[in-house]
Structure formats: structure tokens, C-alpha cells
Length: 500
Image (cartoon, rainbow, N blue to C red; front, side, top):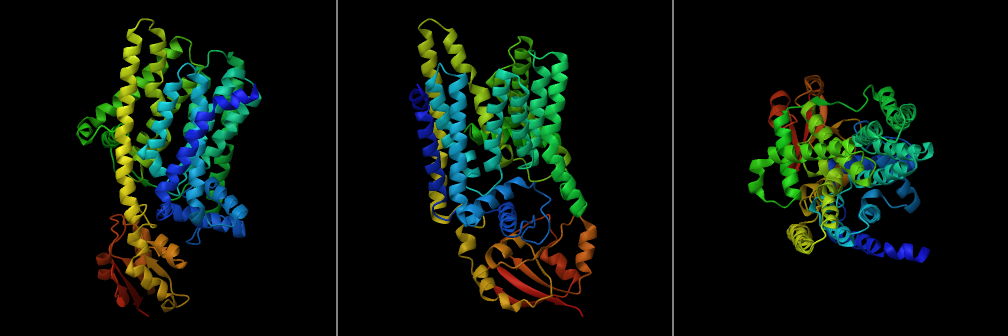
């Protein structure tokens, strides 16, 4: 009997192995993709492993990001004695394989009558350009997506038992997700919403469970925020007000959905209606299931999270300033959205008893295969590019073969101790030379700009191939300070300001 249980999930295990290999293919040329966030995570993980401190590469406490992902990387580094950037491809491949396995396990539970549907969804996950991009980089989303899937599994277990023990397990998963990414608060909101809608709980039990879940799930996040506040005086770092209105965020969300659906650029003309239709349709479906008393199911946990997460990102981007809504920010809802938009198909086909059922099933399979063929073509194009240049970011050839990077490595001794180093890419300076440096200030923070201009003596490392309109420009600096060029190579210069 136990052997049959394992055999039942053999196809899911095979899919997980294929997913592992897919990540290996995309990272074998240049290693895992490195962005500024990645360097923040990796440097903090190294300090956790070596010194037990939450200090980043720029010698400041980790505040802008929560603590668990660097801690996770630090534990792996402690066990393996391999730094996170080197181990990144294997870490990400294991995480992606885990996501695929958990997804397949879940699908086999609530769509047991349609193995074909499960296989099609697993293939769509493996081929997803959005997920393959995420798992090609050293990003916290790689772990957070797994936590989302584990939350769905844990909450379904709670729906079957309605015990305090099962609820605490759900709350613990949500709590850990909140200190992996601050967006983990969406799991707290999802759990709270589902508890409110649960028609199998009496009012006293519902109140008790909501209080228990809220306190337990938010405990680690509150601790992290209090620690940040006591350490640097800010709970989540310096945050700027948004410059993108609601209609633009709806549009950007719709363009991501169109990319995920491989609909082509022409569909972006209808991006706002696409977003509205998807979100409103899912809300209507959830309301209808509540009305029918069918709220306690896997599908509804998935739908509830999709709604909550989508609305959270759109509204957060409307009030707080960060990178424009893109596939990375929305990636945790890819699998739940895929399941939310397709899980009804096997149920509808099961209801139909005449021969038209086979015709409709065939059409559904053909449409899904066409979608997967389109995503496969996108993957192959990306694979060709990355086998020539590497994963975009600090690990690609534009950085690894940069003459200016080689120059910096060879001339580190020109920087005298005690003189601060400023740059427009402090992450790159640390990654390639190991030297600490400070990022030149953002234009928005005039107080920081004035403080920078008050400096009498400093080095400035300037990368010509970067352009960040958020930062003060080289032209701005030269109008306020007298800079002397002391070194240069293709794509960069080194200046000294000495006004003493």
C-alpha cells in the first residue's frame, strides 16, 4: 500500500527532476544571476555565517529586506562551506524542484480525477519563463514561492481538521514567509479572510482561531520590525512615496499577465481591462462559492491568495515607490493564478456525460499545449542568449569581461585608508573587489545630497555603463565638487576629490 502511494507521485517526482535540470541549464554558463539585491542577501548571509551579525556588504544593518532569506543562505553556507553565489545554481534548482513537487502533490489531491490536467499544469510550471527567470537569480522569491505553496497545503490540512495544532502550523508558515519577504503579509491576510468566510466554524471558535492565527503569524514580522527600529530607527528602511498612479499599476500588471499568457504585445493595448477582468472574475467566483457554502477547498485557498496578493502589489505600488510592477514582483502568484484560471475545466468536463465531453477535452488540451509551445519558444530564445552572454546582471559577460572591472581589481591599492569611497554601483565594487563603498545619494533625499556635497575628501568610482535617474549624476557632482581623474579604463573612471 505504501509503495502504491509513492508510485502515485512518481510522475511528480520526475517533473521535479526535470525542473531541477532546467535551472541547471540556464545557470551553467555564468552561474546564478546577480542583482544588487542578490549581493545584499549574499553578503549578509556571509556575515551571519562568519560573525552572527545582520550586516550587509556596505557595513550597515540589513533593514530594507527581512532576515530569513539571508539566514537561510547563511545556514547553507555554514553546512556546505560554499558561499551563496557559488552555491546559488544548486540552491535554486533544489527550490524549484521543491515547488514543482509540492504543486504536483497538491494537484493530485484536489483534481484526482484528471491526471492529464496535473501533467499539463506541471509542464506549464517547468516551462514558465517567469519562474525560470526567478530561479536563475539569487532572489528571495525563490524561497517565498515555495512557502506560498506550503501555506496552501497547510491551510487545506487545517480545513480537514479544524484543530488548533493544524492552525498553528499554517500560522508558522505565514510567519516565516513574512520574514522572507515583507509581502508575506498577504498570507496573513489570506488566512484571515478564509477564517472569516469559513462556514464550518462556530462564532466563538472563529474568533479564537482568528486571534490565534493573527498573533502567531505576525509574531516574527513584528520582532523583525522592532529590531530594525531599535537598530537604525526605521522599520523597513527609507521608503519614498509612489510616482505611479493606480491606472498605471493596473496597466503594468496587465502587461505581466499578457506576457505570462504568451499573448503578444498587441494584447498590451487591453492591459487594464485584462487586469480588471481577472481580479473581478476571481472575486466573483470566491463570493459565489461562499454563497453556495463551498468555501473549504484547495481551489478557494488558491483563489483567495491570488486575489489578495494581486491587490496588495497593485495598491502598494500606488502608495509606495519601488521598481515598476513586473514579472518578478508578481511571480509568487503565477502558479496560484494558473490554477485559479484552469482548475474549473476538469470539473466541467466531468459533469458532461455525452460524447461532446471528449471534443471539449481535446480542445482544452490543444489550447494548453499551444500555450506551452509558445512559452517553450520564449525559453529557447532566452537560453540561446544566455549561453552567449550569461544570465543578465553582475554575472554576465558585460561585467565579467569588463576592462574597468579588471582595472579596479588590479589597482585596489590606490585607495588610501580613511578616505571614503563613493560610487554609482556600490554592490558591484564589493562583488568584484571586496572593498566597501557608499552609494551616491538619491536626488529625492535632499538632506543626503547636501551631506554628500559637504564632504571635503573622497574617492568616486564611476561606471559609465550604468544609468540610474534616481541618483545624482556625474554632471551634478562636477558642478559642486572639483574632481581629479586618477584612473580610468573602458566603461569607467576613478576620481579623487581633495578640497583640504
